[in-house]
Image (cartoon, rainbow, N blue to C red; front, side, top):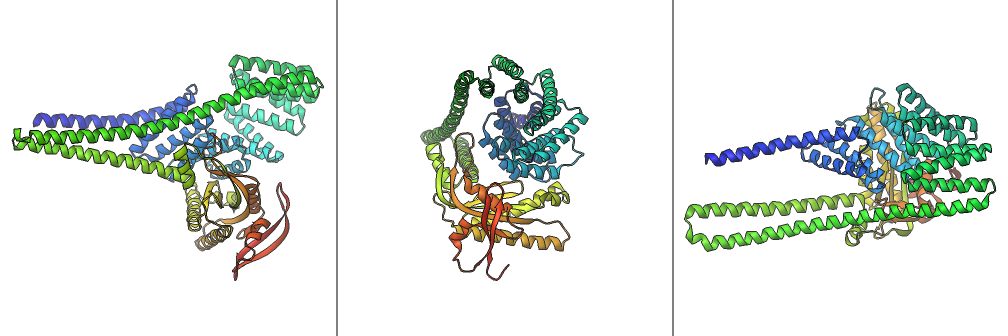
Length: 596
């Protein structure tokens, strides 16, 4: 007995050592991923995923969150924006005030990266405003700040606010120069050059782009160097320097060929075609245009095949894993039955102590079977829960059955948009933890309201909240439900403001807008694995919010026509209001009878 106990204690000691070793490995790997710039993103993703599981097992939630943020960043680099966004939404929901504030900043910076690549500039602007309002100048990790500032400036320029974008790029340049940060100095110079070119200041554009190209070549940033050469070629063309522009593109083509970069080769051929057409050399322009089409199709085919292959491999791998788990359970059941038969056959050959030991063995095996089944069911429940947190139930079911879910057109969907007024000013009066807690309190209340009316929450980004009725196809929520929900959202914010005012604390005010019309909803393609909605209806709903007033629910003409005869509702016509990018639109404030 002493020998058996000694062996058991030795095993327990090894298990504890393994636990410490796991955590040591995870911490060491995290540091390696931060420093090693040569490792490919597939390996980075695998390591970050493993780290996350280790931290989860040991209850280190902050480390787990940061591991998932790293994983999201690598998935984005691999072109899997869908996976990356889902990870970031999870990280945002799990973030706790006790965690390092840099983790929250990393989540927001990665959101801006992805939405910038998806050309959703309003969202980039919104998230950046939140992040910069929370930023503490004493924080040492300036790289996160540079990322957010750069993405904000690009979004500002893309939205047509060139003056503000120029100020932001200049701010980045000055901070990078002060910090002696070569990489961000290069980025700011390149962006300043591009911005100056867009506004017609060719001399300044040439100056900034030339400085940036010299730095890129010196530090061997080849992708940036090629982009800068192409931009310089455009400046040369604007100046009428045809030969110089051609020579720059020739140099870029040589670099792209050496790197076997199909994407950059296609870029060069497109620029060559445009340049030759500009100077009336249409024959040569046509030749380069055909070359661009071939290379671009090749690049897109490579990406499409890669993406589809990865998705199918993932689906088959998960399916196989489930089958293996079931086979192991079946094998375990068979083994258990065999042991029972053997014990019954031999029990007359053994005395009571042996029967007792056999019973212990059977009991242990039964417990193992039960625990195995429970563990598998628990993992299945977790997977189901995560899937339903991302997708509506009907879409999730279709995805499980078919391995894909088709996007669907909906003739009538009612979209709610909300946004807090003066968010930046209020955020400056709160700590990061207080701000996150207040936003979370408001959005959780909105979630309950959406659930009450059967409305599908789409997403929350920064200080904005978006939901829709009439989707997916079996959704029974009506246009009227969205109006009632929006009114309750305003009720909550107004009442919370009264409470905060009595306590002498900062509080939010909110605009809400609703528009009704056709949308496309679902999971589109393989690079945006997220349930979302698209169409002009979404854009108009956003304009209803931005054109509204605090404390009011602003609706479009289309929404008004659906609910204008509803008892208990009162409408205030606002006339034709100018909506950004949409011209003048008829709008109405809606409120309950007896309120204003």
